[in-house]
Length: 496
Image 1 (cartoon, one colour):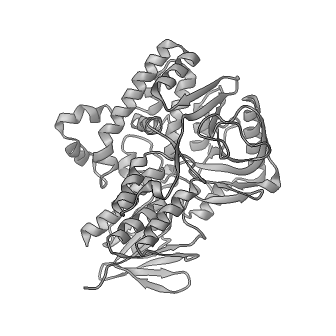
Image 2: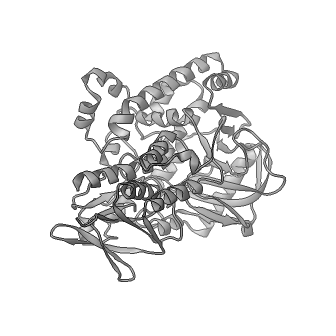
Image 3: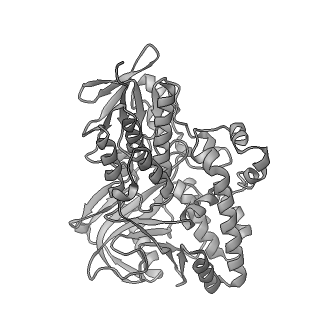
């Protein structure tokens, strides 16, 4: 019998996970990546001679990767060194307030009590328990399963646990739920930020996304050598089972015969036959016609108004002074937090006081000091995903950089950026890296109770064509993208 041939388009985490899963089951796998390295958004750049992560910086849901490696006959710890983080994040406000959130529940509660009072610590315990219940209700029937509809989700959960599903509160906004969870506006602001992990506004996203808080509170690890090592590890896992990786190989179209996929056509004109094609590009790129007319009918485009957040990211090798950075630090303005999201989704602009996230890659798992000199910084500010229709001007970018550094100064941190040691990626740059997105980093925004169900699943309308990545079910984020790849591979194998 002829062996099954699979082509994976894109070496993002979803594509890598699909490739490893298929190869471990004896499928002949070729991964085509137009870039020069694996990882997709989990990319690495060089700034001032220093290599640093320019994409995702947080490793959570370790069980997803333990399962991936185990199913491929390997152990995650043999390929990566993971260090559990004691301090999840350090937070600063423009009025000088500071708060450290810890992984240990007792230590986290004590920190909340010291920051906002004993009553608020009790509310934190209740919030933490509620977020855990939401996650537990959805982990197996939704996150780890092929895309369900609402009725199918109810069936999977079962009538005996219907109350747990109702508690996920999809019809209440995350901001509204947090308003009843905490009295201190700073804690509301802090936990509302977790909606941006899905590229969404907490004022439009469902309270269901409080499960993201549980994911992070349940454990964060640092990947020794940077997050890009994870992509390299999964690449090695797939290659060890025979998968072939071709970089600088741009796919121009998906080819069909007799109503199903027959292979792909590269931009060079080369054709590769395939029984299975897994597309790890943004799902909207298919509907936009980037892979040909037949593939365009397989998945809908993403409406511009429904795009998730983009970003301005400064990858820098720079000196810092003042505020003692942790590995992960977040800086807030004490003003109207909703203003930031009105600016992004309504006015299509960056507010004058944006929330700033910094990953200080040379800092340890606890609050250790940084190096004596320049350090590697990933500085992230949310922005509208208009990189294809309304690119930010040089003046707007300069204004945003000034506003970012100004907020940091008000929080007590001075960052001395050097042009020769700074690489900026704006929404237009993300659009070039990930076409048909406008720079959106998370697919569709998760706004409203039905948004999650509007993400496509692994299977498409074209037989033999499957989807993987953060723009499809179960959603964005490194572990979710990895899970999507495993689901795509499982669907393809089942259909064969």
